[in-house]
Amino acid sequence: MATVVVEIAVLNDRRLLDAVASIEAQRRRPDRILIVGAPGTPEELLTEAKARAPHVPVEAVRVPGYVTEARARTLPLLREEITVFLDADGTAPPEWLESLVAPIEAGAASFTGGPTRPLRPPENSIERYIVLLEQSIYEGLVPQRVTYLPLHNTAWRSEVVRTLGFDGRLPGAEDHDLETRAAHAGLVGRFVPAAWVFHDKSNETSFLRWLRRRYRNYLLPLAMSLVKNGELRGRLGERRPVVRHPLRYVDAAMKPLALVDGYLRWRRVRHRPVF
Image 1 (tube, rainbow, N blue to C red):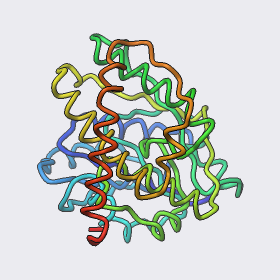
Image 2: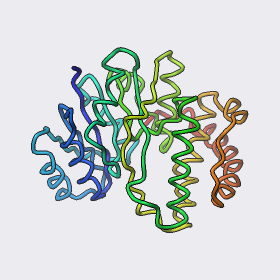
Image 3: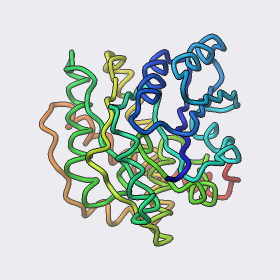
Image 4: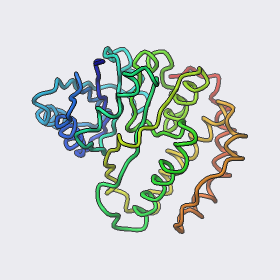
């Protein structure tokens, strides 16, 4: 069995406690949990999180910058053979970790990923759209192209992550960029449907906040990653599953703007250092 670390990046989010508790309850426990606290995460939360895993060593570090930069700064701390990324708003069933790392341990893949399920039934239209959108990604896109995997709920051979690193010029699309570069390098990624986690999106209640986050945190950085990695033409000709919800029209209206914006922004930042 390979050694495994589960890394969780957090920004003052108490859902971290449930995430850590679910790792403690794994049928196969990891060798370590690494909590990466971004600025604004109180020490009390990190201390309480450590108490949720009495049988797993927990290391909590504070680093400057938000998630992408924080993960990049902790690359030297990834001393285990396999690194698993889980978000603070995810909780995992007991068989999750065992299923997720199995293809890597068997030598069949360099990285793997599993789907998400809603923690509870959606309570408003925004939450319903998020659930349907994530379902369409995992059921309709990831099986045909593994680079669609969100970094949340993925496992990697640690040497791959340390070698390829994260591109800080693409915050919000560091997962697509990392997976695309891995695929271009000839590394095999596997989708593992059995390695699912619950995803708690209970904080999505404001349409304007969702609109800003959808554009700034996903559509725009993804467009930049597509341009950077020469994937834009293939993406435009791709058949995508239809999400039957009114917000899909809002999404569709934002995408052309994001593509133009992303192209221009990438040209401005492409010569900058990665961080």
